Length: 173
Image 1 (spheres, rainbow, N blue to C red):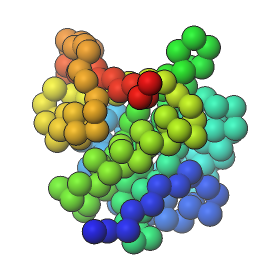
Image 2: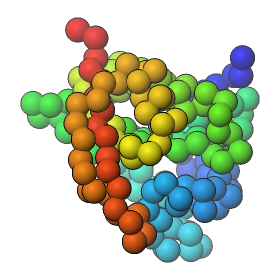
Image 3: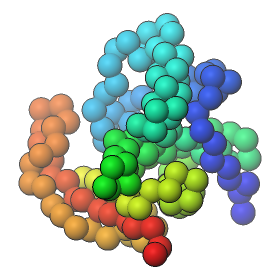
Image 4: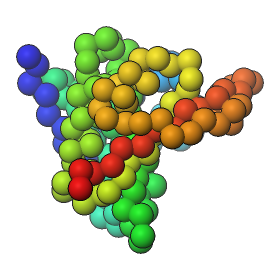
């Protein structure tokens, strides 16, 4: 069993995170929209880390890194935190191309869900995925997420429009 750890993004992650993002850029962009060009310019990842720290301090978003035996293999984020009346956030995750098929997405979501419902005291997490991504659907369902909606042709990637499935998980009450 791999030694997995989830940690909040920190300035000390700069070099490793930069390498991770550059190595996996094309792979990630085959599933989600490209980051702005400024992200890949000198200082871009450092600025993104600083923004992530500010968002976490203001409880707007929380970004985490998943490591397998000390090696960065995935990112998982809780964004769009809504506190008043909802205590909800949106979940997103990405596993490096060389690390797919090893159960790391499932582990990353499990660990982020634990963090959300314990340390962050959230009540609900939402996630979306494209209908043609059965691996992501499987990850969410394995972590107790239930599909609650479907949006037709609502996500644009390049020149194409895709359907999205909407999932939710709740803290145990």
